[in-house]
Image (cartoon, rainbow, N blue to C red):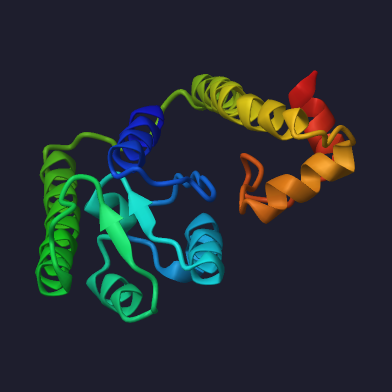
Length: 195
C-alpha cells in the first residue's frame, strides 16, 4: 500500500495538484461499491469538493466492469496513475479486460485445485494451531503497519491546533479515514494509536 500511496502523491505533485484527502482500502478490486467503504467515502469527498479521484492502478480501483462503468457515470472525474491519459471509452474497455482477468485467475485457481485433489493431496491446513498463531502475528503486523501510516496523519492534524482526542476523531472522519478495521473513530481508538 505504501508504494501505491507514494505513486499517487508523486502524481498529484507532478500535476501541481492539492490533496483533499487520502483513503486507504485493502478490499479486493473485485468487490462491489457496497463493500468498499473507503472508496465510497472518497467519492463523497470528491463530489462535495469537485475533486478528481486519483488511484495508483486501474485494477486496484475495480476489476468489476459494471461497477467501473457506473463510476464513470457517477459525476466524479477519476484518473489512474498507471494510465493517466485514457479517455472514458478506453476506461470502459480496460474495465472489461480487468474483469476478464479476474475471472481467468479464478478459473485457473479452481482448475489447479481440482488437479491437486485428483492426485490425492489433502487440501487445507493440517496444523490449525500454527495457522492461528500466524493469523495473530499477521493481524499484529497489519495493525503496526496501519499505525505507521496513521500516526503522521494524526500528527499533521495536531499541528493545526486540534489537540483533543474527539477533535482528532472528527478530523479523521471528515477526511474519510476509517480505523484499520474500517470502523468509525472514537477518542479511545485515537489514544490507542498514540500510545
